[in-house]
Image 1 (cartoon, rainbow, N blue to C red):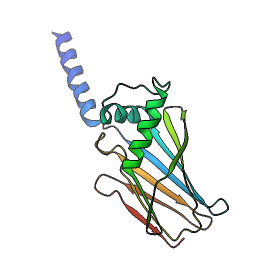
Image 2: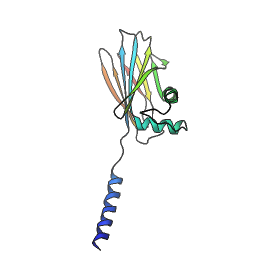
Image 3: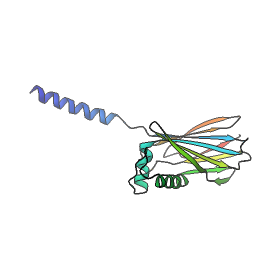
Image 4: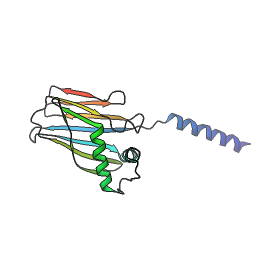
Amino acid sequence: MMNRIFAFSFVVWLLFVQATTHPYYVSTLEIDYRPDRSALQITMRVFTDDWQLMLNTHYDKILRLDPDTDTEQVVTHSADYLQQHLELNLNDTDVTPSVLGREYQDDQLVLYLEVAGVAELQTLAVSNRILFAELEGQQNIVRIKTPAKRKSFLQTQGRARDLFRGF
């Protein structure tokens, strides 16, 4: 009888713990305006398992990251996905960042992007909708850094666009 009470209590406790814990999904997008290089240098950090889930569901593939099972497909699909889900509007002109490279750091995928030929930065609109379709509760932190200012914003599924002015 005591074993049954213990087992029942354990199951109830386990269900309670699972019901109260909620996974936390977040990425960061850091945009550094470098007037000396006439460029926006962009670093995106996302959890490797979240990015792997996106690749496999969005592109109907079976890919594994870190180490990659198919590096060429990972690079191609990652660039394609970013082009669809990361929108930058620089001084009222849509721009597409180039993917310069990527690396794995601990449990994160770090992507390096760049927008070249940026003579001046008056306004920058950013819409970072990565992983919104794949992960409920995904939040994307956007940070902009210029020689004179720094700003940070939180983009969520209901609010995924910010306009930065006065740089």
